[in-house]
Image (tube, rainbow, N blue to C red; front, top):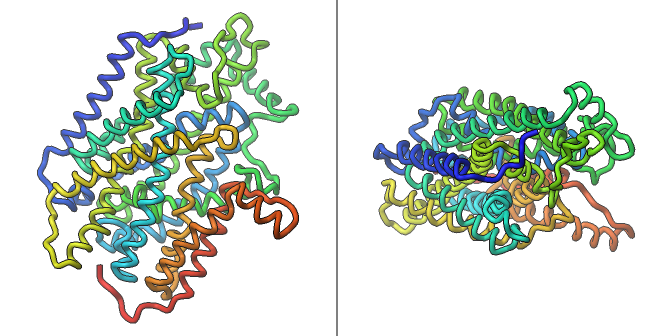
Length: 522
């Protein structure tokens, strides 16, 4: 067994070298002069493989890096079953959303809504996206700060104290904003390519080291995990067929709830959809999404396997014997990070923490760029045109928008750190659930625009508001309150059911509006 690692000067050197390399790539990507559209779309010239890797890097935030091992450490592999809906949703987006949104030829996907319903509708969709992405990416930034605190303040009695979290949030946020400013979407794509490579390598390295720690062959480990769950259940269980609506990871939430979620994520969230829009053709954009989903399954499976091995490593002294680690995880959300910091050999610990930073920055940089592009193209430019003022299409305005968005994300991440309750939600649930407030109305509007000829600006605004209201009413405490008064007993729904219900309500509200009298240009 390797000795407990202390984060040495070698590890710090590796970590800082990685961060310097990321910033250098950002500067390299921004070396060419470009206008605002080139800054946000890269001339639609990015190769398919790089776009696919960037999609994975954006999807696999620290919520996955830290949260996926947590899920299997505490439970089983049912979280992986969500990939059934993942593939269904991906094919729906690839076949029906990507071609239409790509052919619209606009800077953001909300330009398609502008062509269908007018500038006011486009602005409303942009505001909803900015609201939802601010919430979700702020949560991700907060989650990223947790392991950073454990690294920077490991000698303190309370490394996750609020002041420490705030400092870590600012550190990660400033670095991510800095290299995004210089190169725009090109910097995001190429740094994401490096980052997902480091994340993948970190997972493989960690699995190899854990297998070296555990004094059993793989076959015997699998046999033990087959009866290691609660009441002798298997921790290798993939599918949960229960009809319990409170269980988040069942076969039914995978096939229904997660399918709707994936369609919303890749079809209506510009942070994700932006990737397909910068490919060289709509077919290549769709292909990059499908490839990314397949690779995503592999990477998430690796992190889930890590959680199972960490369960043996920390929780089964009957197996580990004298090799049982003296340091038990201080909290569930620290289990993988604690292993990285204390049980990785010198040098490899620095590489592993670079992987964690890569996971953090891979989702942060893309969110900043996407939010800046929507704020400029969907809100700022139309406002200037309406006021009869010239539109600045140089790269200056986008860079200022990136700085502003970066600051807002840092601020909301600090709010998330104060609001998170570890007793009620896991990190994965917290990160996935928060974006539902925006996705419900947005997907309802996109479905109305693509599948019907109905809807107008008024009904779109009502649909977006309906999505927020319905999602709010389905929150645990609120749902229990009003269901008790109406039905006489409290109800509760897993977060993956919020979206299908909210989308259905928003769609009906949107199509209730009469269609515009003529087709509008953007």
